[in-house]
Image (spheres, helix red, strand yellow):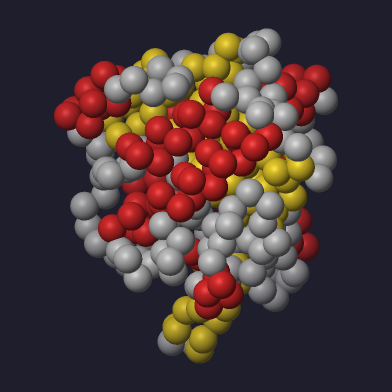
Length: 305
């Protein structure tokens, strides 16, 4: 089976991308062909990616313009463009979109995705959003608390069959189209049971809209079957988080996702920000993340035990 791994690579993201591709190459089952497609933001970076000697070679790089205006969700606008470029690109078999600052840590991770998408016929399979990350807004009507949609896969890590999903939607992300204006506020009031079904949140709450929202809408609209990994940002098995971890703001806490009780994918979170801001990583740096992933892979010998 052909799998196409699609990765959005920001400026300064090469080191973490190298780790991701190293982890993706080591525990492969050998029964599937994994291609790598990326996005970047300039021709110089594109050529650098194509010329690099990663553990998995990069087959194609799309140059996507970065959102230059600075506002609350400008990075999500850029990410929306990247997701749609990868979604529109050639992908046979199974497409897998994931963040550049993650790593696969389960042996035969590719076979898990083939099992879920090809054999179990799930439309989407991947990572759910945190149920602890609350963003507060101060609005004219008062202060509100928001969360991202719950219980469904999102673009941190998501697998799907292009043959099944593309006929349902020309894009995988509508964030830029709806909220690309700096004056826009990317929230939605959960007013009806239908809204509640889409977002996995109770009526009367507020959803923080993000790049994965179109996925949640498609699942509800077309009654698509899906599956999610189990998420934790505590009780880590792969990552050795320092003692001050409890003081780290939730959006910056590294995550582990498990499948069948075993670690499957780890996510550093906000990799570009942490790489350039020593106050953002709370004594857990990109090099610490890379150390822990590589140590786990060496210890397990590709067996995950």
